[in-house]
Length: 471
Ligand code: HEM
Image 1 (spheres, protein in one colour):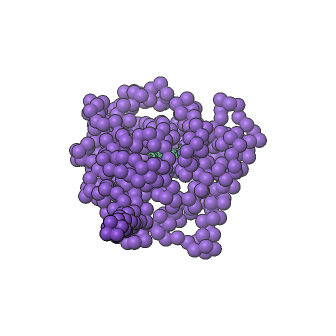
Image 2 (cartoon, rainbow, N blue to C red):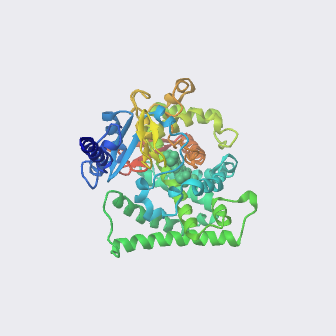
Image 3 (cartoon, rainbow, N blue to C red):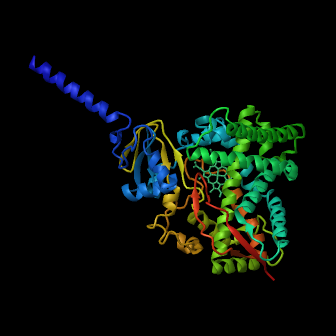
């Protein structure tokens, strides 16, 4: 009888301990150091808001708890990795957790590649990736050249001291680059391009409000305005898709939109992925261009060294081509240091269906795992004086001993890194070589340029510059 009582008591104690151990809202389901939820419903989302952004929150989290740390996204435990050695353990993981990107769904749609995992995600990448592969890139140089020269002419026509809204101009330029190269000449027509840009602004401004926690109520004028603008963007993409379906180009002239059209995809997937690639394509590159020119304008020695390289490699007139682009070594260092210093894309994420071991801890199955790319890009153990803009960090001699996963601004895991990384390097190289060969840049006095970190890092306010034509 006593034996039975001891067994029963032990069993009940074990059961209670197990329930407490696994109860959501308790951090006991993992040994990973980290935050307790500040709120039973919202977890640490409030702390994230107070930090300013997820990136700033992660900087603090890792400073306090180390290279692997945990926190609560609402009632979901989330793990963050903040060191290249830990990235290594996630190098093969493909699937992305939906939860952390759910906020973008009203704009990009639930069928976006952003949410596609397993066989579906891999099949899509296999279908879409060649549009931004090494061979495809060769067709885009002339488009970038034409757009860069157009921008240079516009700046040249501006009177000496006229203030230029750098961010607006660079986002516009990057939008033209992705639409023309991926969707064809329909976007050459300003009548298509300008309203598209305006509708995009309406949707994006509303998305920024949503990401800060302000959602429109169903049927409200705000929601109607958002849906109307989104509908118009979809209608434009639908019109372009129909035109390309009715007038198919020869195989060697196929663009991304033709791949979508030929893929015989459900209409919703076509619209989602067309819009998703477009947004991912210009938001990122537009901000990379903005930050690069901001750093060039504020670092005269960098500006002059770059100008000299452009003259040495291209002379006064030559264009960037697939054959000479690799000679623009210093320009590439500037782009890489900009991606690092401005943390253009601060984080990525993955999850696994199984329990996994990372950094000596068990990560329970289905737990979203953040790749804190930006935390690593600002880690002073890897990058001394991390806030200093110094392209020499990427000089071949200075890079050779660095861990290969220390610089991964386009992500690194599971063959699912950013599909647009080559595109971005080529477009920004062509644009900057045209603009920096012709102009000197000056930041208008009295501005304090601060970053605003979302899924992409942009300047919190417009950056105003003036330009002087070089002799
Ligand atoms: C400065 C430029 C860019 C940066 C820093 C950047 C960064 C990133 C990062 C960090 C990811 C997440 C990767 C991961 O989960 O491991 C990503 C994904 C993605 N990027 Fe980019 N990107 C840039 C330019 C572009 C361009 C030009 C395009 C379009 C051609 C593009 C399209 C995408 C798409 C569609 C995804 C999601 C892919 C998927 O779900 O498999 N990006 N990007």
